[in-house]
Length: 324
Image: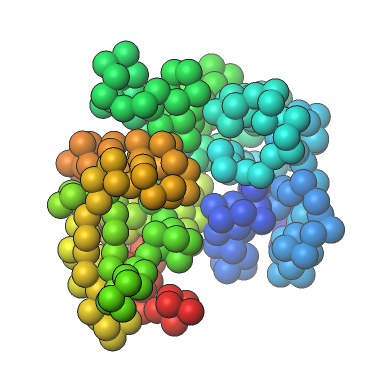
């Protein structure tokens, strides 16, 4: 019965990561968990869709702490994610940086989790890139006054907020999404008509994961229970060089794809999404590649999430969405 299930409150339930966990819980109706989908607008089409699938939908806003506290009430656990890239009104952009927003929102969630007495929180986080590229050394542009890659570093800073509140927390470190290849990072037509994949990765391996596997991995962590509190779990479904990615794209698309690595200067000059933020991220991926991929040992991740998707498997399902 539903009443016997433990409720997981999911922040960002209509987004990429939160939505993947909502779907994972709903796909396991005989499992021990029910899902409470938190969204700023319960009447949005995506929220109504989740409701139609069987999720409890509750309005909550990480910028309104009382709403989060109410939404967490009675839940057993929570999945917390913040969105550095969220669209914001101009007045909010003037008031605070995106990193400041993430820190404030993470603090809100941590306090609400403590006050609600949650048994287990999974916090979606990332590494602190300043350990590899200290801003004081000037190797890369310093962003938002003190960060190397703000959407990594602010989340790393926020880890301590959950610890300071005494919240039993698992720190789920994610990585580059496979889906990013469908959002401007995939192969494109060159002027000569050939297909090219351009990434500033040199010959380093890129750790990547399917968005759905974030939710499945988070659910697996919840299944293991509060004994996972205090642990860091880092996930990926693939470690691939640009050349290997191009070969896999060639097979899936039925047309040769050539990898043309860009220098960081070239990448910065083309006006790619995220500008210096994204360029610094790729610089980190390259310099920290060995440690970053080692932390995301694929057999270990698959032991946690047996349905982990390899990149070829994911690409086979999504090949028709490329080159439209």
